[in-house]
Length: 436
Image (cartoon, rainbow, N blue to C red; front, side, top):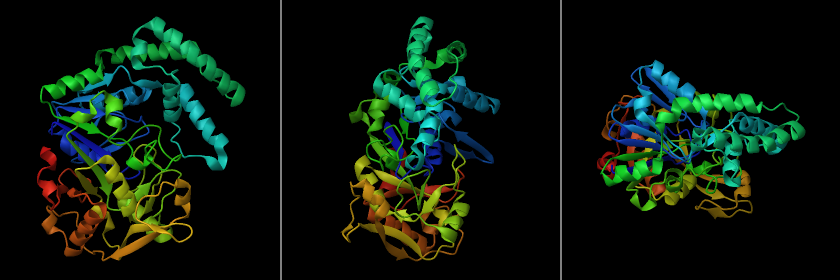
């Protein structure tokens, strides 16, 4: 595993946390490269549940360095709260965590503007988490953002914060009619926070390049999913960063040609949180049952997830974009008792045209009709299976069908939240994926 990426194949919430935890046990460096505290990875260690929002999943393993890359937008208060929560549970965070000084910061004015913008959009809202992610990335692109390294020199930070707040305060007060936080309070509060983090701030790109040259094993941890990517996803109902493997180089400073392997995590069905097109979305009793069996509520927001059948058109598109070596299929156990199980293998567009490629005309996605194939379901609880061969024949047939539809081998499967509920698939890729 010299340099391996694990990203989301769908709209996020695919179970990446568990897969990353599985691989992190063998990694020297684990890196988060995009997003902010709008993402959440859930990991179960025995009876203990850990929910990570900004800190990479390797933090639970001895001997790994965990880097928050420069492509992440960091809310300092949220980061410190997360660090303190882990330290209270005996995790030596300061020994294992590093933060790239080039990472941009989220301030209270970003969150205010995020929430008010959604209110003003009305029916055109895009379903943000309200955590200031989009406005922080907007400042980054507009070259008015503030980076973590700017805070290390008080005068540099003072100058940049004054300039930022002059604009933001005017918008918050004169456009949105809200009260902005005072400059002095925000300056002092932020300075106190950064002093606690000063020993952890590094040049993340240099750290990774040196580690790779030394033969260290590096694991790149994706946030959200491919269909929420700023360019490749269902725009404008997307996040504000690059969520696919193409985001790694920009989000970390690691050379793109040095990445050795790329895997994506996918549920055995589909879910989505927030607004936006979702072709295979269910309704009524079927959706309620799938949500309850899968415990489909956001790790970060607690919002109920929209649930639907597996979308092979979307999965083929995401697999091809990321150039995957394999897929890790999660939540297979959740489909217990559903019979038949449906899979979308094509789309019927307005006007009747049937396509098997994901259409570029995203406005049409809200009007398409999925073309389904039906497969036999299973009535047995499979959460106790320890290998692919122990799965019922109909379950194995379902997995093989998804593999053929995606055109990418299913390297591993998960049949429950526990660390011991994961095993290799039957493809040739399965024998090598953890060693890649």
